Length: 91
Image 1: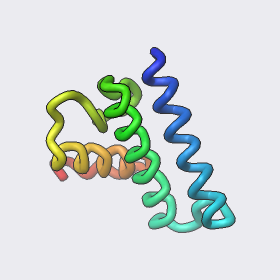
Image 2: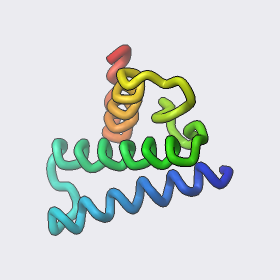
Image 3: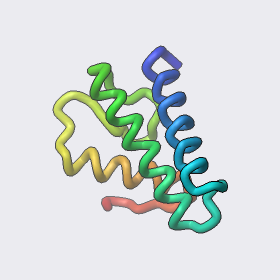
Image 4: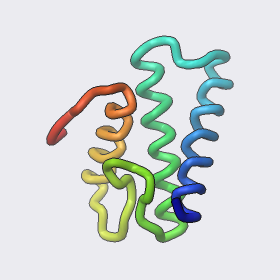
């Protein structure tokens, strides 16, 4: 894993930690877990965009040059659902 991937991991896990602190506990429902993961992938996407570097760690890249806003949202959604064990296909 390169420097971008390491930064993505820190951004993702840090965002999860902020969400847990805000809620006062770890996610306890499927909805809470999904929201936490979705926000973590959004943070990764913003980081990648700021660095100008394509995603390194995600099954569905959350940012790369020329990604459309729709594809970005779709990939963030797919990655968040994949953590939950769901395959959302074409989304």
